[in-house]
Image 1: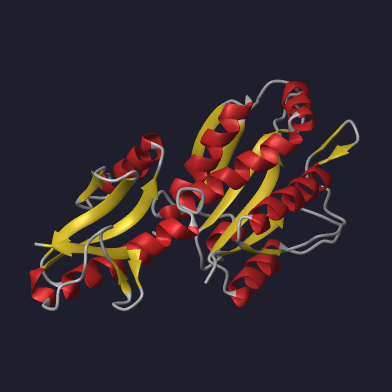
Image 2: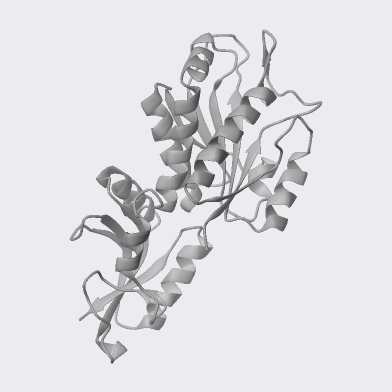
Length: 282
């Protein structure tokens, strides 16, 4: 099953969002969301939208749509604004609280946009925003530059396709879909046993001889692996990086009993992390 995501273009219809010299936030967000969605669809993601035209829906309606659709992730795109023109600049991402895979996704998106040239303002906690509070899946709101900053607008316009690709890359990096291709997955996952095993190993007949870990990510880029590792360690998960293969694999715990590994996997999933159980012979 592919990952599913709902993309939300902020504002719309009778709500223009922030306005600057005739430029309306609702137009920038819709154009960007459609570009991001196309990239994600081409990467195998099941993409849904809160809007694809200039219509208005309340934030609660948008959250409800995402919940009813049962998507795995919700990403809302906005432009920022500041009381004084050409004063504030940069990108930031907002999350409901500072935990789970949503924070990893927010940091990944920010890092990708910083490479385009935006100032990285970090990840901010906003528990009162409806689209973050009422959504039942991990949710991120991305403020893509300040609409009343001429330099941010110039960057937004001149690097539009790169910005769409950067946000898509941040999402895909979080989902590990641009780290592993289908042949890699075939190497790691054993369909006969319904859970992953180490590359090049065979599952023994006696499961008592197995050691289990919960894997939360596999990356070609060590920087992203360390970012997820630090996120997990900050919450007291016994996380570590296994770098014995061509990937940097972020794993949690060492278990002799599959039931104990499954309990940790459930705990991590409740916290919003993408997980799978991996094993190797003791």
